[in-house]
Image 1 (cartoon, helix red, strand yellow):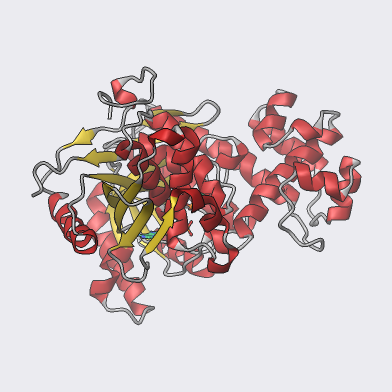
Image 2: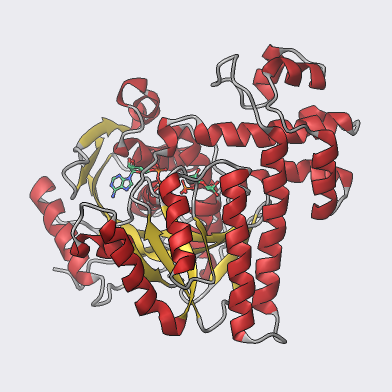
Length: 480
Ligand code: ADP
Ligand code: NG1
């Protein structure tokens, strides 16, 4: 992408998505996808884009409040085979037959995404990435048509970021097909913005780790400006992901956006109470910066300025000395019914305490004076506290997730927590390296007992993971 690229600005080689010759481990999947591609389009793909999912180790529901998070890219990914075409449209096909083929013109991308009839259909996530590309690539450079085949193995609707991998892979595919040079940081920022076209107001963690992920290292992702720093995990720590078998699609309910709105309203009410211009406050970090308090002091502010009972819209308008129409413009509440209530104290408390836990998590990893075992205990304890807060204060867990967290700890994890947006999905547990196989087997046995599924099918439901490489482009030279 670096040499022939058209995006006319200097980018450090390190900040470009690598273009690699496929290695033997990925080759069989690329070949299978190429066969599907050729059977649909009668031509061969000219390159592949690969974007991984992620597991968030700690820092849940705080990226959209401006706070740092600690994810790592996982092995599971979205693979896209791409070729330009002389026909004028975008053609999409998916190896998984439950995702139906789709076709539309570049001009109609926006209207296809916003078409409310089809709900958050799979192709809309891809089109979000296309829209992101169209917003930055000059119109005359967009290829006349493009042929795409997708194959993903990230469990969808499960908190491992399958949606962002798909959006990011679409953006990367269009940019590369068009030889438009974008840095990893730009790709992360554009795809975070692009995914909001699906309707959810995410904070950018998923797209950041999708591009900035690195093999062997989790990342501390900070925002505004976007930065990714290595987090060196203890050598004896292994993270195991387990699926609760409850699924939740973020874009098909208002759960996720309600939390984003609650955080914004909490920040604005604190601002008003403390004589700051609430209309210029969007995130909880904005009000923290305005008040120049540390995170512990913000906890005290939350407890004194916000009450526990849910707020009605009438009370919020009164507290902010504004009307409903103005509030709709400033506070992300337009999609809610007038009778909707908002839990501001609980959500803000979670955010400030979780932001502190992320910093503590990073500090423990950097400590040289403590034993490895003690590190596991500290990290595990922070993860379990994070889960308790997501369950109690943020109310985004699920009974099956809570049960799995309990079982993981019972089976020897130093700590475990919901990972990703929640309301179902996966947990992540921290285990001593020497105990992983035993732990995984025990958790699979537990799941087997409570499931109609066969043990072999549950293999993909509990698996150890390690930090993986972010997005790459694969050439096809060794393929055919
Ligand atoms: P996640 O937590 O995995 O990001 P979301 O609920 O936000 O879950 O989005 C998941 C959606 O992304 C799926 O419902 C589907 O539309 C789309 N998706 C995920 N994986 C694939 C795939 N392999 N092929 C097509 N679409 C996919
Ligand atoms: P997942 O779990 O991938 O749906 C979502 C948001 C993140 C973050 C987490 C909660 C998107 C695309 N992703 O992730 O930004 O807020 O929830 O920590 O909206």
